[in-house]
Image 1 (cartoon, rainbow, N blue to C red):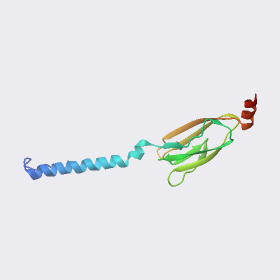
Image 2: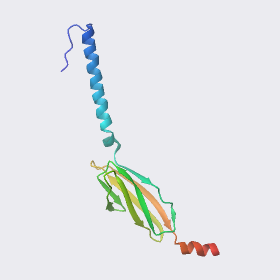
Image 3: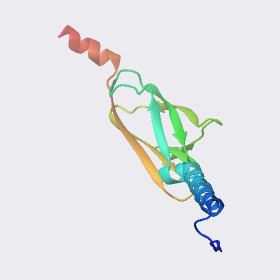
Image 4: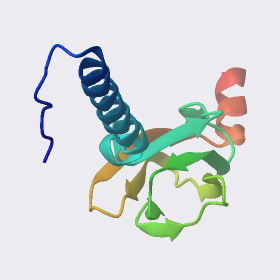
Length: 131
């Protein structure tokens, strides 16, 4: 418990109170700064996103996941390196494909990134061009 000095007008007493308040404020500020990752929650950032229209059956999804404990691509667990980077190949089905990246942190909070792709084989594109 903080006890105020008897003489509140003494410059030393005022200085002690001001220094104590500043130190406590800095401690609270530092704690808030260090807790920012807990407050933000899990994050997924895709790098070099493939276009929606694809004529290759296999595409690569790569990116960075932060503040996570688990990461899934279409309900299949994938792994990151020590810096949080991931790189996974994805096989597209004929036509329309929906892909979901899901991440979870240690407190159960989740985030999702959903992307759609349309696979059209190159042979179909070439035959349409000749028509």
